[in-house]
Length: 157
Image: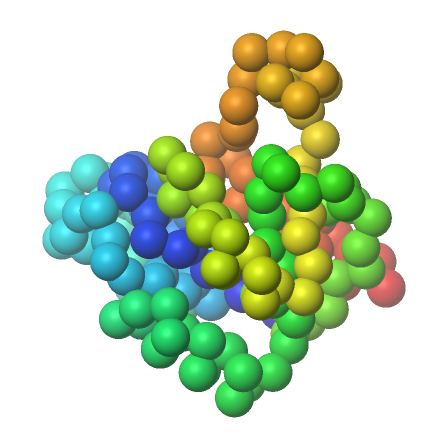
């Protein structure tokens, strides 16, 4: 089952919504600190509703701690970025993939993108790269789009 990784998330309700999707799909959720909030924050809890007991949650003190675990467990690190050119639908997902999403305000730093096995994007016809005004999708929306595509592929294969 692909795993979802949020790199230093900043907005509590986004993390709560991603957690709910992870609970619904039995997918691990990995949070790379520092977080822009406390997990006890009521907005995180409210967004996750009463599903938190079913979230397979893993917290990592920093990027190095996460990478140590990720390398030990294996699997590809798939970074989602609006600066990538390969669409998220153009890859064959595997059960041991790590779906990596960046901060809401600035995405993933180059040093994190540099170690990814692939850089993927969610094409947006109304995005700034296409002459529109939208810079990016909401973090929870983006995570849901990619996670459910990975699950769709895994169930179809």
